[in-house]
Length: 636
Image (cartoon, rainbow, N blue to C red; front, top):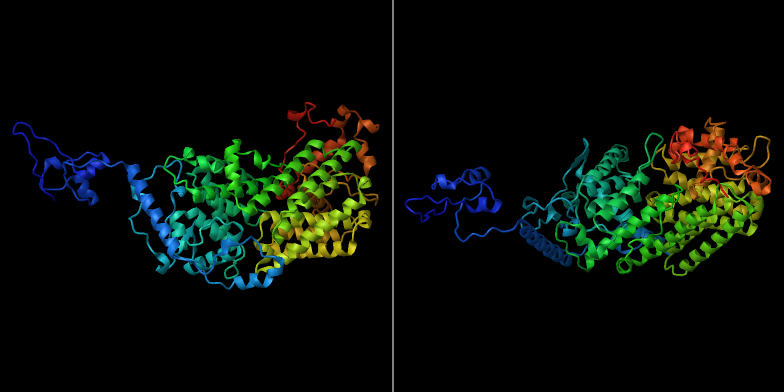
């Protein structure tokens, strides 16, 4: 207890509060008993001291000073510690000619385990910074501290599993999303962001051979944590955790819901909520002071780039391509600075994906559900133009992985030719489409052989394109269109793709496993792509889902023959003559008759099957309801 001799007037007793109570603006009763601490300091264990020259310090100023000191210590640690293995320096996959070097890199030592305090950019935009959350000046060096066991929703993970899962994530997954800090130990990661910690653990469980049971028990808990972020303060680490889960989603079985698409929409809006789309203006979206130096602006811009990639790629298979990526931000200066801070790999992939999305939007505007001769000719022109743009971007490819993404973009564009009538297909276009499918599957095989876990650690975008290539080849090989392609190469690539489905599968009942079974059974079927009278029926019946419609149309054939769904779906289309019956220009019914025809009613039944929900169709949703019956959907 310090000296409490206070000069007081004999006629009036002056009240003085202690420094701790004055700092917190709390009621102080130190004046009641000068020989004892005030009740608040006594209760909280603080030193009760009365000081005349005391000046109250602003809480945010104190927190800002702590953050600045933490950043300085972080920079010193980063400068003094260099791990032997830096997985974030390379691209997502090794070069085709460097398979051996990729295998050697897996034997590298575990990357750094020094605990690093999070930077100020990881602070919440809506929660105030409490001084109790800012630890003492010294950064704990937990390289020598054992990893602590963690529990989520009653499911506990041992320290040994946590260490190995972090190691596995760093070597097999982290190079594909190079924004995570490789120096953070599991303890430091959990202290800075429990959600990002569990996202890393959950993704690592996907191909964790030491304890394969963890995936089944942790996936629901981690997904629940992801959904809880919608009602929590948004931080940069929250965005990174969602990106991790959306880039490598948990296996979707017949009993689980597909959260990929709704969470992707939430991801974009949450990222814009903290100003990731405007990296140099991020302070305007935060209540706390941010250190917007060059490194922080670059980190925010690249995180936004990954958000855009996930967003753009998730909408195309659903038939809802997102708007062009370069339209946001709208300010030209902001857009230029954001784009300049992206990595060369991100720029390359975003350019390709932007072309794919623009192509899908243009094809949808041209009309795909009912193809007339004029629409087919205009579709050919559109696809040729976008294919040329993809080829132009492909000239900047600097690695085999870049060239692989070029082939994926070509596949998405060229596959839209299948929406035309089989009788109007150009043999040259079919040959190019078949070759593109073969190249995609052949390179996927190289990816599978280049690393221990292979395609099982690849992104969802590669999953979708492998499925698309297999369904395209299946349709070509099982029909008279096979006379326009190299059947030997196409058949070998198709069988390779079926094998890839087995290796992509993480659980017995996930989407890859079921699609692999469907491909196998359709290949051995004599009824697939045949009408009831035995004539060929290769035309697509699912015509509103863009590249996803090609996959789902194959599933329709499988459901009819092997899934006890006969009579549910629309009857197969035979050729242009059957399509022309819906075109008034060729003597077909009028627009009014077209809207009221039984073919539309039969198409609406396609959305009422429970199995459809497993592949992204809503259950009991009638797109031809009276709400939309205003003539606006009638093709011209």
